[in-house]
Image (tube, rainbow, N blue to C red; front, top):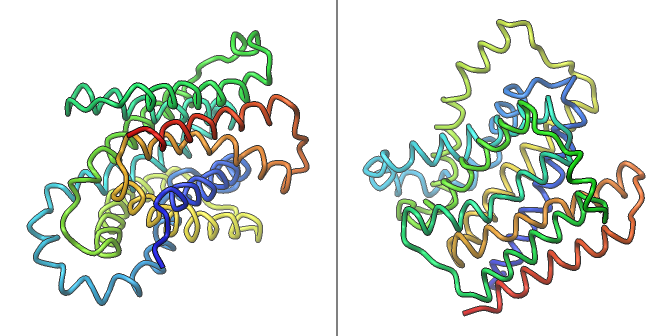
Length: 291
């Protein structure tokens, strides 16, 4: 049975919404690089059983494409997540999710500036409507709230992570002709190799994990759902659609974040939340309906 790539993109962003909650909730217990490193170590343990039958066959293609695999691993595996967790040490999840919602716009801009790609007018309208939904959620239905948001060093780290993820997504159509699990295993190993010396420096600086059951459960979640399943679903969804079209689905993260906060943190849902979610889904509908 063929699974819709749009459904896979929705699931990926559902898992990633939980990742933002974990990253902010355990910022004191789990240092950012440690969280990113163990996230990918756990993910690799789940990826390898699926990838191993294909790795031996795909090794020549992977070896020949090492110049592509390096930026895939550095941007998508190492940089995006580690920089996000560093940013969440200093900024709120609200600021972070708003800045992260610029990813679809950055993808469209870089695709136009570097590759000459242009979206149809209806798709561009979809991007604008969806982003308006994000702004409505962050502003809590009051435009004046936006004037109170201030950028700090954490926001700057997240902006850098936004560019890293946009670059990773734009490159996905050019990934090596290998099985998706082989590709994911390869970039995970590259990402872990890049994170290892930074993680060693973090330990040497005295920043250690406070290994409470809750913190360990949070680390396990990031490895299984956002890293393993999220990346597998995202890579396939982008491969079967288009980077700019798929990028719009990242506006679902704040919408899902609201629902998860209600379920797990007991936070209420207001009318502006529902209005913002409606705009986000309306923008995605416009984008996916455009030819």
